[in-house]
Image 1: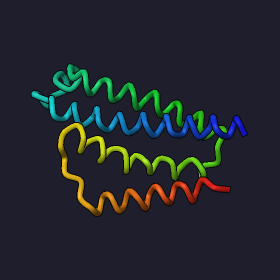
Image 2: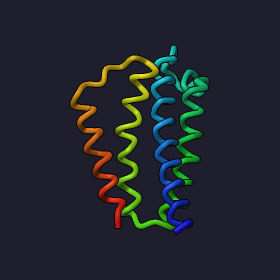
Image 3: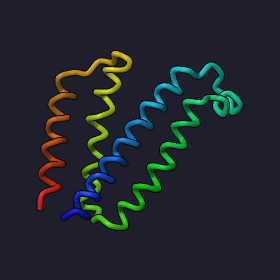
Length: 116
């Protein structure tokens, strides 16, 4: 049982990492002044996002060694809940009622898919 809880924790950490990566990509996009190779390589937000995505991908590969994909993959959909909410909090991006309703359905689906 303890090992199963550890797997859930790692899956949530991967979802959190991917979500944070999306927010970093957005921040990178907002801070781009020169959309050239040199400008992109000089964008610290972009480099941080790529590094986080790389680390999170390695973590996800570890998760997939230990957890069936049918259980793990629905957890990735939680990023569709986390990212819009954080974008709303950080940048004031609009979140419509349909997003909230869809987020509720995603959370319910992940809860259902993760039960055995």
